Length: 368
Ligand code: BGC
Image 1 (cartoon, rainbow, N blue to C red):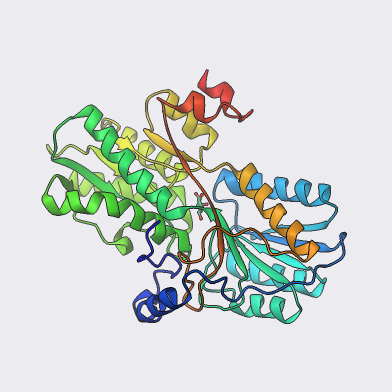
Image 2 (image 1 turned 45 degrees about the vertical axis):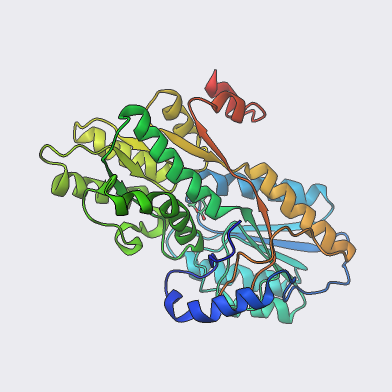
């Protein structure tokens, strides 16, 4: 894993924090910085789980898995989702309420990485441990742990898949592509994009890959709220502005499945051939699309594993043990390096879908 990249700082304010971040990152490398030493707590304590809006299937699944997994482990569970429109305010209120109810651990999938510092400070003040789940919480010292799939690796795999898919259709470049990235308030969006660009940028610089619209900057490619309709609109606009004539679109970097399907819908409605489109999350409709030969790739980030590992963290904290950590340098949140437990993501195309989903009762039947 590369140490020079700071994965934790949200796009907004990143420049100002970059110098500070690098210094901290180097200084604290290898240390379990800032995590609270717990003395353990009662086995039937309350554990709060604050999840964002249901912007992709993985969040829907996570809620159910947390409710069951925490109860099975003997805890009381308070699992909440932010509403679809007032996501930030909802989540802030939900976390405060978990603190008031005496939650010993609060697991947070942030709606907006940079808007939770007051609430996590309240949690710390009350003696709770804060775990950032899937998405980092930025600009606060009050996050104890981060658990996620390796987001930078997700981006790299997407970049490689885009390239491989295009090469399979057209062995020699130059290839014409468009870039999409996730919501700017989600810290993951920049990390995914950076991972993908590590693969694609050298080829763009050489002229082997051409971004047809010229929109290469993350601000130009971002899709607010990870919303399908926003992605579809942007793709509609790109088709009109750039692909109205002879220019053929070979590939689209899409950061997740919801946006991938929106891109494909847009291209099909315009009567154009479907380019190579990447994705993430292994959503049912996207796995079907991959098997049908439309979407090219997705990423398998098994939510069952991520939730199970998070529940394991909670169990360790309950016993007064330090949870298992396997990364102490990648995630500088602008205030500290957050000790992380990262799981490996898996790239899935039609070629390895059977094997990749063999143990997933929901997805395996779709690959037969
Ligand atoms: C998650 C992705 C998901 C996206 C939209 C990201 O933070 O890591 O798996 O597709 O949010 O919900």
